[in-house]
Image 1 (tube, rainbow, N blue to C red):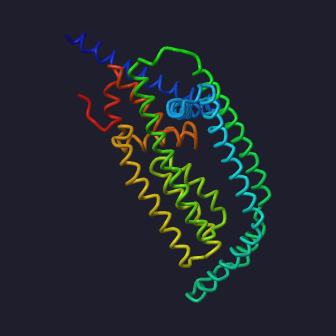
Image 2 (image 1 turned 180 degrees about the vertical axis):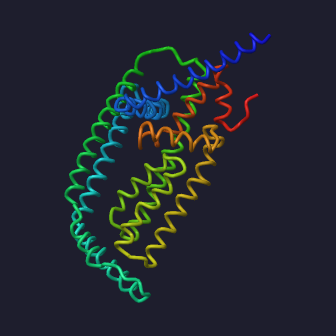
Image 3 (image 1 turned 90 degrees about the horizontal axis):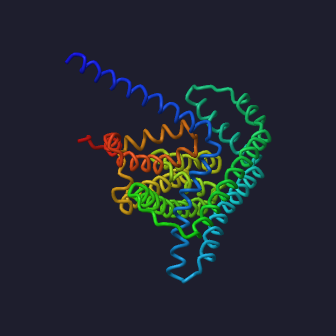
Length: 340
């Protein structure tokens, strides 16, 4: 009896240790291969959307398959080209007015220093002004150029992978019958469709607000708001805070500053807490704690792209775990339910 109990605990401890080692190996593999896996995973998710677009064009407008696929590929490619063009144009416009913003910042600091001196608080205004005048804008520009080159390289890989997937779908193949894969593709497709629509609406509203108040980099901030909507929890907070420095440089702490910040906050709150839950329903069946945990894990593993992909990746993993008897309890915990 004692021997059986000892064997049971030994086997259980061994299984736990092997699971921890396997998790470490998989995590190391994800980190080591991130340069290839990130574009591959993004292209797979985009393929699930563009394949639905091609199917819609065939069924609604009787497009031949080759034309529907061509339109879908053109739409995906055009989206990425538009993102690059808008980003580079907005950054270039901002850099042209960099000297004006620098002078506005110096004037604002001078006003703030004089107000603080009235309350007996003295700051070294000359030191701050000299530091601002010597900001290495050209070094930042070179670093930005390097990052943009990296982004363009990743986008090129994504477009290539996505094109191969769409062209591969022309072949006649057996329909997917595996319930786990079908559920995974259905959930990811619904999630991405709703998120894309909500993100586009967010971007349009943010652009309207910022352009209406003539805020510099309005298109860039609207694009970032659209993209950051894919990051759960913290994405909306970041998208609201990003325009704050430019608003401060343009308007100081005046009425316009607080009106714009209030409108941006209201937009993110309404879309994120009222509109999206209405269309997602049960969503990806993930507990909020699991969502935050997945956000932290995938951000540590894959950086910013991991933050964007954290929810669909975790939801897909949860579906796979729910179909395996030994890991069903983990899937229930991710959903916020106690395993039976």
